[in-house]
Figure 1 (cartoon, rainbow, N blue to C red):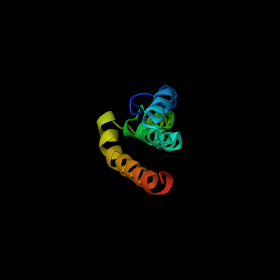
Figure 2: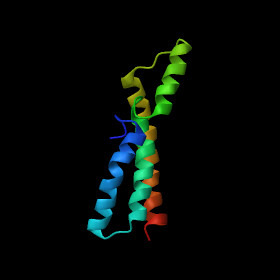
Figure 3: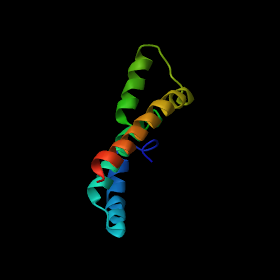
Figure 4: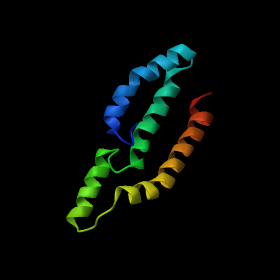
Length: 98
């Protein structure tokens, strides 16, 4: 969701759903909030429109006569963002969810 919506909007939308999932499963909501934090901030980097910082960066690049296509961004960001999210999952699994 955050790859196509601004991450603030996505997190605000998903917070109630996250609360509900924690309640239904009986798990500590703390873990779900950390997962939402990581996914909400990092997944926005999959696309150039997923976060305000990405949009600003593209604007600065264009001002300096450098153009990056949507598909080029996604190809480059996919690897980095996926690795970041995987590290986050490992961190959540071993250090937060005990």
